[in-house]
Amino acid sequence: MKAGIRSNWSNAVLVCSKCSRKLDGGFGPRGRTPLAKALRKHLGLKKGRKGAAGIVEVKCLGVCPRGAVTVVNGAQAREWLLVPAGANLDAVAGDLGLND
Image (cartoon, rainbow, N blue to C red; front, top):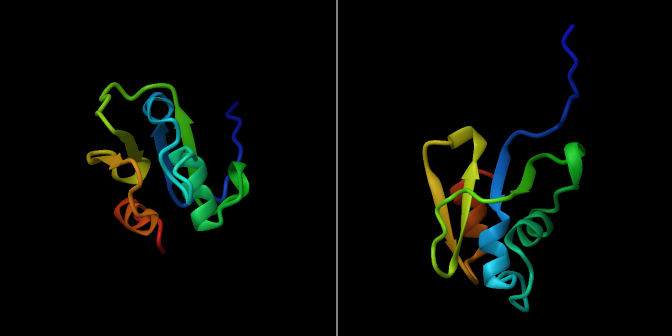
């Protein structure tokens, strides 16, 4: 027997929480918001599986860049992004394919 739960997500984006923690936020108007939260707010996404896309913080993706956060779009898992602190969220959303 297979059990499943539906979501409205068109994409699942994984954001490294360890990188975010090292930056002490680094995004949003004051530069204090973690990337996942800032991106979710910028795109007007609901939390949880009811949102149009899922932005999920994961423990560590193992890349650990200096001054940036590692991000993976599950639909384009071959290319990972390194998002520097203070990056333009419109550009980040575009690179992740979330502007649709």
